[in-house]
Structures are given as structure tokens and as C-alpha cells.
Length: 364
Image 1 (cartoon, rainbow, N blue to C red):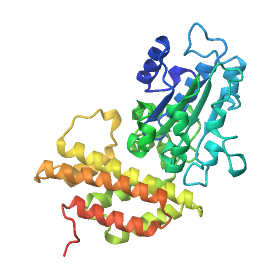
Image 2 (cartoon, one colour; image 1 turned 135 degrees about the vertical axis):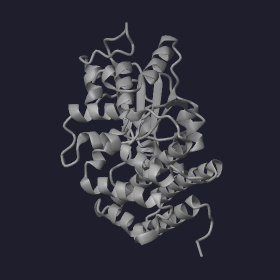
Image 3 (cartoon, rainbow, N blue to C red; image 1 turned 30 degrees about the horizontal axis):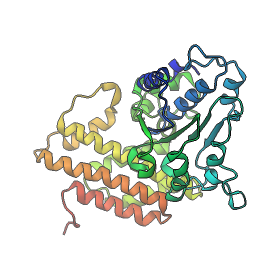
Image 4 (cartoon, rainbow, N blue to C red; image 1 turned 180 degrees about the vertical axis):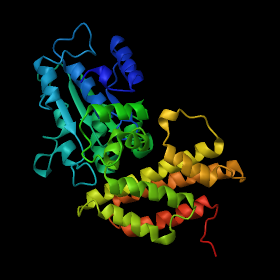
């Protein structure tokens, strides 16, 4: 994949181009932005560029032909270290950083990045799913972050600064990535055969994607697509806990499979949908001008019907909506660290109702 095929991230490319031209590449970067917008793809292309063996005249233009380039694509380059959350785990295990109990500090990322580069001239480590770093894992990285080995580069990939531990954020250069436009999502969907279910038009998936390719793929499941719409309808009532909708959310999570990790991801997705709803609520009541290529017509209609003619105090409502968004983020943190999903969801929808109605206690 060429740089021009990585859509919407020209500013990040230009930032790294300037840093390399000035020989001021930092040792640690934190990439933040919604899931499914190309952060990992960008990180891998950057690694390929820096490990290319034939691009001395254009450091950010990999040749794609040399052994270094091909090994990065195959994830077999000896100087590239890739760490991510295992499929059935709720966190990135400590062993990924410092080895298992029998090989402490003799294996893992912290050991490997300190070794002399084998062939690439530098060591590069990419930590995907940095949202799933716990305190123990983050602490294991501290020495590497504070005293990075010469010619090393560490890239962490997450969704926001707020989901990272302060020890990580304070030692990283932050690079923000914006969501894709709907036309860009649609372009990718049309060019790649990644949607198996053709029941939902690709244009509708792109509209509902919130600029995330991975969300568009998830929504190609008809049950997921319909659940999102039902959730929006419930939130628009300002009483999402009515009609036992908490059970519908749990059913949606359980339909993902028996593994807790799959159910956990579904609940986090449901909260992401809710955050998207509340952000659109803000745009609706403030009558903000938004690029039509970045809004979902269905969600716009829902919020306009519910809140478009509201005579309520806008500042008070904005505060309530902001608290709803914060409550959704709290729910995601709880889900990541707890398997008691039913109580978490019931409390979440109940409190969203109280907050959105401007109350702190149940209605009498």
C-alpha cells in the first residue's frame, strides 16, 4: 500500500516528513483517534519507510521491493516488534512486555527493543490496542520510555488520550488522527471485498460508520445495524431504560458469542454508538454547520425530531449531554475491568435517563 492510499492522514504524514528532514524524530509517539480509521496502517507504513534499505534519498518513501520492505509487510522483520491484545483477553498481558515468569526481562518488547538492530539500523515497536494497557503493563514500559535505547522508536495506538495512563501520555508525542469521511469509507468498501453480507447498501454502512471502516464492517451484520437504530430511538426518549431495554443490550452482547471478550467488545461498541448519538444531539441543538459527508442522515432525523424545536436552556442541555458522554466512557472502563455486565448496563441506561432529563434521582 502506498502513502496516497492511506486516506485522510496527510497532516500526520507531513509532520513525520518534517521531523525526519530536521532529524528530530521522537522516541515515543501515541497515535489517537477512533478505531478503524487507519492508525495501525499508518504506523506500519512508517515502520516500512524507516526500515527500507533502498530509500536513502526519500526517507519516507519505501521502495516496497527490498527485503526490509517485504519483511515489514509479512510481519517478519527482525527489527519490528508488534504487540496487541490477544483475541480472548481483556488486557495486553504483562508477558508481552517483560516475558513470562521464567524469562523475566529476557523476552518481550522491553528486552527486544534494547537489542542492537539486526539489519534495519533502528528498532521499531508498535503497540496496538493501547487502550487495553493496565497499570502493571504501563509500569513495565517506564524505563524504556524514560531511557529509550539509541535508534529506537515506540508507537502506541489508542482511541484517545483520556483512555491512556498518565505515565504513557506524559512521555509520548501525541499524533491525532481524524475519522474518515463517509465518501472515503464508501471508496474503501467499494474497492475491497470486505463486506460479506450485501443486505445493507454500502452507502448506508458508510453513512452509519462515523468515519470508521471497522464500524462499517461490524454494521454489515443486520442485527448490529438494527440494534444501533433501536438504541438511538431509545436514547431519544430520554429514558433509555424503559421497556427493559437494558436486557436488549445484554442480548446484543451475548449474541456475539460465549467468550466474555466478544461480549465485552459488543458492549463497548454499544457505548460508542451512544456517544455518537449524544454528539449529534449537541450539533442539533446548537445548529452547528457540519460537512454533510460526515453526518448520518438517519441520526440527524432522529435528533431533529426529538430535540430540534427544544425551548430548553441550551447551556444546561449541553452540560447534561456532556455528562451523558462522560457516563458512556465510564461504562466502557467498567466493562473493560469487570465481567458483571448486567448490573453495569442496567445502571448505565438508568443513569443516562436521569442525566438527560436533568435529574439525579429516579422520577417519582
